[in-house]
Image 1 (cartoon, protein in one colour):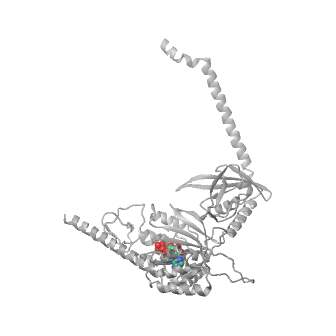
Image 2 (image 1 turned 120 degrees about the vertical axis):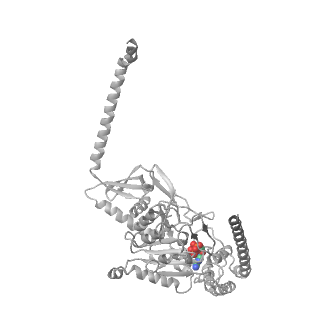
Image 3 (image 1 turned 90 degrees about the vertical axis):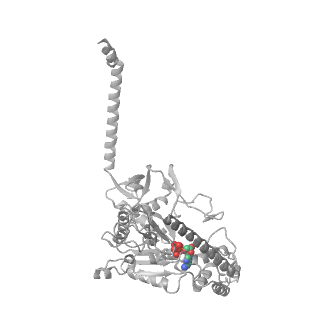
Length: 514
Ligand SMILES: Nc1ncnc2c1ncn2[C@@H]1O[C@H](COP(=O)(O)OP(=O)(O)OP(=O)(O)O)[C@@H](O)[C@H]1O
């Protein structure tokens, strides 16, 4: 008994009672403080109108673009420093700094100063104080940012006015740019606003560009026509052919010409499944270019429309060569995380798929594609991209080298040519001899004459000219030798490949005979 008393004795002590009192009083004070703070916030919030902008939607970009142009926002005392994807806002405006696109020959990355996450910032706008907070949220497929703007006002007109102004300014600044969005899990991530590529910089056989542009324009203007006939309002283009022939370049140039954004999906990306693709394609806006790159990387002719088929080669009995199709003789195990051909077809023309978009698909292996995928209604227009013709070689050369500007009134020409196609820079210039129009035309003809028809890639020609960017005349004089070297290198590569294939075949036969 004494032992029990001695054990509980200390708990009856006055010191403990005091401690308990303190804990109770402290808890009560803290609970009251929290309740009153929360009540105060609710009271204050009841006067505020609040708008939320998610990073996953366009208005977030409009508002961020507008905010970065507000001096008080960029001058916040606590801020994050990052690169600006648009290269145009809240950037490089440090006093005394020369505004050039290049520094020491390297392209400058524009800097953006943004107030830190969860810091509330106030901006005075049209007679109202806006309370702005950027925060991070956890989404289904990773984190994303959210912007919250609160204002004391009688109605939400001030917020509507802000969004409309931000959109107007954003569109004006982005007029010369193409927005590119990349698929990330099942949502679209903005990948920046790229300078529009002039259509004239893509050299293709006469008529190809005109045909595509006319077709796309006609489609964009024909929504009612499609609706009247009950035809799904979609159009698909398949650009196929050798690597480095201008397929991707043409799509970017078309996007610029028609002022459309580009949404890029790589079907062979990790984690791509039927469900993911359906969700992604359902989230594409109506007027845009949807680009499915390297279609053959995910699908082959040998793959059936069986929903279990993935089209992706398995490790078991897969044979792959550069010329023969991939043959998956053992069907891969059923896996909800993979993409099937029927899944792709359903995503493209299922009920959830968006309408009014231009689908562009590219491949280097037309013969590997399933006819179900390439039939009209899915991919309506097919364009074959070949190795460079002489006509293209001449065009590429002419586009590449600058000509003398027309003489001024006093007959003097002082301009130094740029090395980059058509771009004006304020510093770091390479000196390129300027050619007269006639000389350029003559050299281009000689250059084309030395290029064998349909043998070299356009990208290869461009690479050669880039190595000779300050030597237009020498580039022509030496092109014959370059062609010979290229042929030798290709022959060597082919021989090595054939030897490797023969070796692999021999090994396989030995394994089989054992
Ligand atoms: N027809 C062309 N006109 C102008 N430039 C071209 C052309 N073809 C290729 N190029 C140049 O070659 C490079 C590669 O071109 P691009 O990526 O468009 O080729 P691609 O056909 O899409 O290649 P891949 O099939 O390997 O993706 C780019 O720098 C591009 O400017």
